[in-house]
Image (tube, rainbow over all chains, first blue to last red; front, side, top):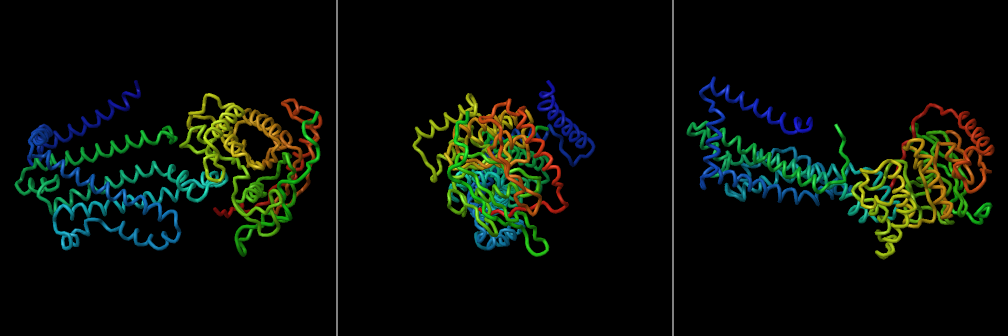
Length: 252
Length: 276
């Protein structure tokens, strides 16, 4: 009963409250389209084959490819940074520098070298995913509890066995966290990248809509970006819960 | 009555005038100041001392996590130079692997290259220790579903499974409640008695030391030396009733007095340097 209230009713109440506030704002201010109008645009756009559905699909696909490439590359690099002191000493400053650099700052350079095509956008996204994931992976390996390392060693594990059979299983939950962080960064990056240079995609669509004063479409874009990012994050969380059943959860 | 010869025929673990300190210069902290004792074949020896005296440091030396500054630590006449599966270790904290089931935890050591066994044998060993440690029905359980006492039984089983030459136990029951602790002491006593493996138990519990041991090495405060080595003249094997015998009670009074007299001087807790 209370669980149902907490898990279903209260979140729904929160959403209802936000929609009500939005509706109120749209009544008071004629620059703001109401929720009904915007949801109508979203609904119509998603059934049109060449409409919002295409833009959403393009943006989602770009994010997916960027995260897949970037996070995959980040796994060996993150482990190497954490495991080998020499690698860490040599590359940690560089990794810190590139991680601190906002991916969008690279766009002017990328345009020069790769133009404004899909390769350019995917490159920026891969870059964004890689550096945000690498640091999470690196820190998760560095944070592995020494107790398990000692237990493994005392049972006779070699360094390789220790790594493969103790360190890797312990860091799996953090790999999912790395993917989630990369997803977040990539969504931020893809929209901005599409605002700058793209014909289609949610960012480009919003840019167009703004140029023609179609506020309802800008709002629709925001809703679709938020929902897409949310769904992808939830899917990763779900995959993590299914994969990592052994983790002890702190009851709150 | 005794199911084992009284005097150990040969020694398995030997601490020879071991010195060890941590830190440098004015930060230097001498922990062990010439500690020497032995653990004989098949003998169960407890190391008892006030907290902060470096009991666990001794275990880390025997296991190979640490090296002495001076003196020597030898197991079976061979100087300990690093980690080795021939010495089984049970830790105070719950160190069983949380991502593995009970049976996979127990089998872990046997699947490593150092002590790999054929699958059929692994299964047999796991089944044996599941039975010995009373873990039937929990073979497929994950550690998060187990109580503290059960986790330590898995840890004991995992350490025994690789059939080490000596067992090193670092306050394995310190985190358990009193009732569970007594039960675990009895379980460990029965297992190690039948098993006749040399064992060194680190503990700050007088009761635990007496109940489990043939001999007790009592340590002083830091810088630590051996205060005395006590032979435990309580009938062997021990049973829950042993705790109430006059010999047990008398020895407990004596040791508790010794422990009380060693009030810890104010100082930094030793920070251990460890190497992999």
